[in-house]
Image (cartoon, rainbow, N blue to C red):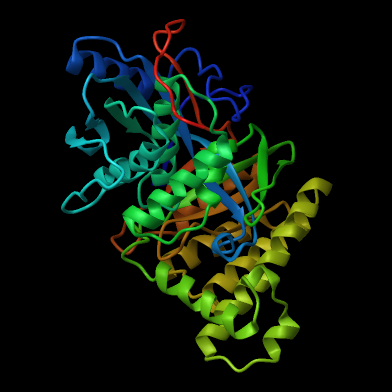
Length: 422
């Protein structure tokens, strides 16, 4: 049967722009688990508790690193981090979701890579971005856990990075860096250390999400605009169970092809190109189709924003269907299992919503924006019509749009010390 996972509790009122916004009360089990594990490991309570959400992208795939437009929403699935300062420059990290795996390294702007990479490289690379900004680098004790599915295209790595940055910011007691600046640091960690040449959408959505809203992001200026999701709708995310890994996939190849097309067109990025310009140059077929996807996808994002604002689910559904076809045929980042999921959900949505692949591609999830009364029908269709290549049912998450990354002193009311230079 279709496996459905309930979202963790999260705040529905706190704004994401404040690092010290109140966290949910009561705390969800994952948050309690990291606090308990920290206390057991270090013999004292953490001084900071941080959370940062995953995200789902409604429309606008691979447009972010082309300086284009995207329309993601932070979701009520989070990475939680219990943290405290050390008296040396070491970082002691424990990942509960990785069977209690550990890491220990010295805080540095150029830390060594961990053999095998994984979550440890994300921690090392993210904290490395802060070191040049620290007046006096402070070591950290960290316990990490979350319910953002890994390898599903829901930005578990961005969630981890923003949680780490918010925690470090709270420990230093310095809020000089805003959400956009923290998102840039998290992106730098991916680009410069982890090795994935991603854009900034994932990190900025995690940093600045708004409850009940998607976020229109101009990935050149980093201007953001909250876009209210229609009343009576829900975000249904269906995981194909085909895991994806952006560094090992053709993600970086797609970026290089886009940059090649931009050079041929004589524009800074494909955000500045038009279909008429594209028709006037000679490009290899694959490069031509990559560029066509980006150009048309940017237009679809802006039109989808207008459709959401007008409550026009018919138009939104058509745009999401066109987006999926473009990702399948021009950008070639879908796989048969994901195409099957999208078709099933599009049939259910009809003219009351839409569905498409979401994330970097090569596996992962589909997103459907549906009227809530259609959810039982969607679950039935997925149960009846979908099995992964290994014969497993779809893993379904029913989500709401939630707030961005937050951190606060823990226990509540205690003070943190230290500074990060502005």
